[in-house]
Amino acid sequence: MASRARFNPYVRGMIYGMHMAGAPLDGITDAVRKPDGSALTQQGAWHCIGLCKANGGARWDGDAQNPGRRPRKTTVAMDNALVSLIFKHRASALVTVVFVKKMLPQWRAVSNTTVERRLGEAGLSYLSRRRKSLVPSQHKAARLRWARWIKRRPLVELGRYAYSDGTVFYLGRTAAEAEDQSRAALGKYVWRQAGGSDALYEDCVGPSSYWKAQGVPVRIWGLLANGVLHVSMAGIAASRSRPDYLVSRWHGLLQRHVLTLLAVRSVAPRWSSLCCQTVNV
Image (cartoon, one colour):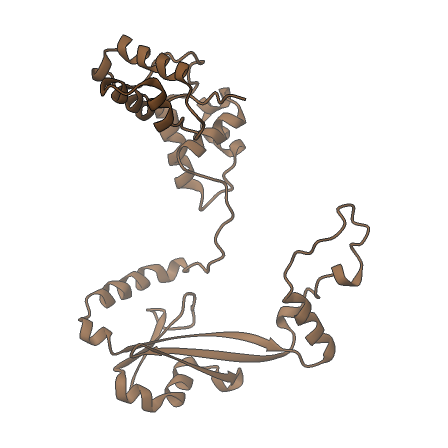
């Protein structure tokens, strides 16, 4: 089936430019593709050349004012207002098509599909939010001041900084907990009957919903200093205070290579006003 994709100004310019350069129709159709990637027919190329000549030839910008389709239902001002609304409220409201029509009365005259199409034309898609910890509002100003201060440090000083971070995982204490963790490692999805007849079979059942917090907690610390990543494991009780633990664990290394140890937290209300603790060694 032939594609009904319409030419955009760029494609029209390519076709007419090759025609002016003396390229035959079969040469044009071999070199040019429609905006959707489909093949161009000689009839379509010849029609485009005639349209360009009728609109002034090389002086035409290629924007067809009446390409045989129904008029656009929205104006540029409406499209701009729609995009501005999305950026303004997406952090404070559940922005849906219903919300858009509630906030912008002029959009109530168009279909929901048209609203979604205009958002797509603006480069927006309805995707899941990134799972990333937010910086609390009360710490944003201090975090920005700290970031500006870091940017003003000389490179020699920054080269003597160490950066640390840590994570926790749990080791199964019993055979049941170890089995739950092994099942969780297989992932959330499994191939099974679409009708659900084998949904409760043992090989289709997922782990307990409590598996993430079961077992013996083990903290893994990482320290990046002098271009080398150092890793250490410790129990939760032994490493509850990050700066104290890191200094005691790598004291010799920090004395040799590092001026300051920065233990930065993405969300740490109980830490200092700069959301970090600085320990000179």
